[in-house]
Image (tube, rainbow, N blue to C red; front, side, top):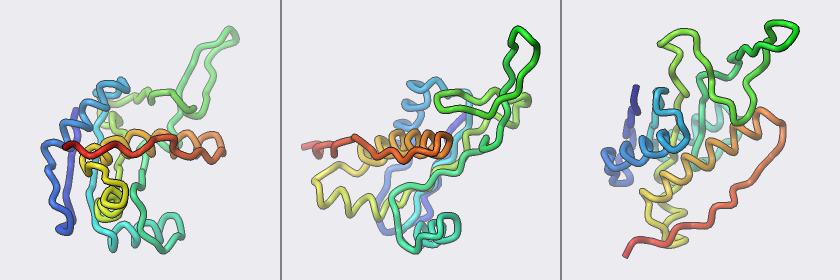
Length: 160
């Protein structure tokens, strides 16, 4: 299983190999290395278009996630038999088939993130990796619980 990184933008120079390595490290830390994950890097125009279609917000953004297992059911055995529950925050999907070992896709608005990094003197690659982890987890938790959680991450200082 692996990570597919696609760079569909030409505005910001991007090192895909480094980004793929960082994402693989995060997958290992989170215990999800057996799952596939797509990371698509796009410019402001494309992320704004996607944001408008799926969230009805006609503005660029930093990250959009599209989970593969939105309505995935997990099974648990209880004293009275087999119970079906919706996937809850912190739970890893339990796919029945190998082709379901997929977490979904993350779209990164690298042009948007680059502007944020320039304003806060943050290294782009470190910001992209931390944003993927933090924003994906927060958005999934918020979606599944109905809460609206905000990131606590402070910008990383640029490597000097």
